[in-house]
Amino acid sequence: MRLRMGATFGGDEVAICAGPCGVESREQLEAAARAVAAAGANVLRGGAYKPRTSPYSFQGLGEEALKLLRDAGDRHGLGVVTEVMDPRDVTKVAHYADMLQIGARNMQNFPLLREVGATQVPVLLKRGLSATVQEWLLAAEYVLLGGNENVVLCERGVRSFDVATRNLLDISVVPLLEEMTHLPVIVDPSHAMGIARLVPPIAVASIAAGAHGLLIEVHPDPANALSDGAQSLDCEQFAQLMRRLGPVAEIAGRRLPRRYRVVSGSSASNPDSAVRSSTSGVKLV
Ligand code: PEP
Ligand code: MN
Image (cartoon, rainbow, N blue to C red):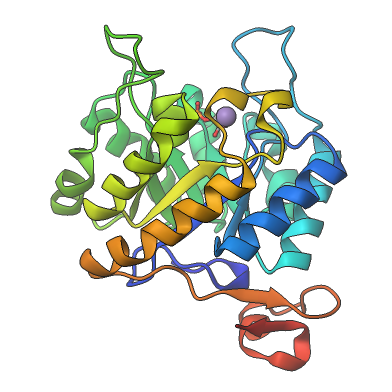
């Protein structure tokens, strides 16, 4: 499966989705996008609508954040993945994003699954907080049944008896799902661990286990993040991780994304030609 700007899921190349938990400002997103693109990521993540446990926590900037994501993605040659929580927002979010994230808390929001299933926009379906593999695959089935076959599964840890880490990462689903389904599987070590220093080793392990990609939270100033700062890598930590991942991907029979860099202007209207054509403003480096 291929996104605009060239990221693929399920092939020889892993997809590296990185960016802040939530879009907080133009400056914050710009710093994150620039850093993750320079380090070799190919998809920008960032929440515009945040599913927060407390209604008093930062809820996201909404459509303003969607615009910032699209703009930063285009300027840095990155695809854009962002969460949609409300079936009524699917058309709007799909207008700006290249991939619709269904968050863990919404894995069994069946009207939402049907709504994204009625589009052709790639869907990143996170595993529910306590979902079995069977329940997760049946949730994916809702999207597929609607005619949208562009589904990627994302393991992000499940809730366990132990609070030593934020969640309990079930890395065994990576090879297990490889046997059970043709759908690509990526891992989100950030929400699994909840602790930034534990993210890099688990990212490495995920790629070694055969994951088709990673979703990683990166913030230019984690200490002052409005959400999930404790688990966010700073820009340098992310760059270091990317350097570690190259040889691991190779051992797993894959490779890191080829890097695309915007040399001038924004993306062309045909994204597939944009990544190949040096005249359109995006250049293979
Ligand atoms: C997120 O990606 O920021 C997020 C809220 O993830 P999850 O749904 O896995 O908790
Ligand atoms: Mn988060």
